[in-house]
Image (cartoon, rainbow, N blue to C red; front, side):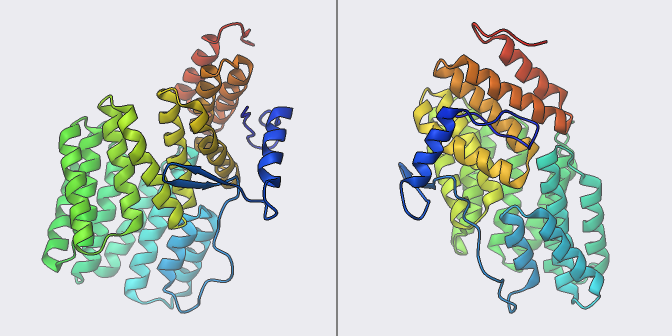
Length: 362
């Protein structure tokens, strides 16, 4: 069975069954890797596949920072960006791109720690806008797209997406004028996210499909396809069709892993495992949950641990292992305390109280 390991000193150690399971997986090949084939997805055991070797010096720095961010090394990505900016030797386009990367890094760090420092990220976008001074349409489009993303994030609590919608429309218009269908696809996709969060699922579905058509017309990008599949899966799930969401989540995970987006793969594997548990396919969920909790620990993501441990608790409950379920829900409580989420702590506590035959420690 799966028992979760969180930060050192914060959670339970593996039990004997877990150790045995991992030992068998690790020893099944001399290389230490195990290919677990599930439909069209290949999950490579518990080994995290990171790019190796030095990054080619001739590559543009923003692309290097993006790659480091994708693999989840957010501190290193931030360091690279800030050092380059402080050097004063980068050109205008590079400075704007690095500031927008910094905004993404801050936003992603906030996801993992449940802080979402939107104002700090927006300050980076404001600095980028000051550099362009409205004289470069392409940079202006990138800035508007980033504003749409951050204002979308800022509007989540109140469900007020008017600013995000306005920036998305402006970005779309700028990209259309430039003839940039990749950029237009990004803007349309942002509108789809806004409608998804507003509960307008059919409009969201249509916008996501439109964004994919635009992306394909300019040469389909694998990471964008991963985003499309994830959000189409959420449309299906929120429409009550969890079974229909699973193929979308499978393709999302596959795309994210193929481009080396380990950070995003954590949440792709988690939601795929959750959907499989929800439809009673617990055995199929197991390798995805093992992968997700390992990535969460590797990236030190309390939010990742919260989400996965809540799924693991349901996984064990479905299999009738109530003690393991209690341990998973308790690990979720630990992680919820780290990120200061009383709502998640309440979910985990309620789940523990509902377990049959397991006394709740108070």
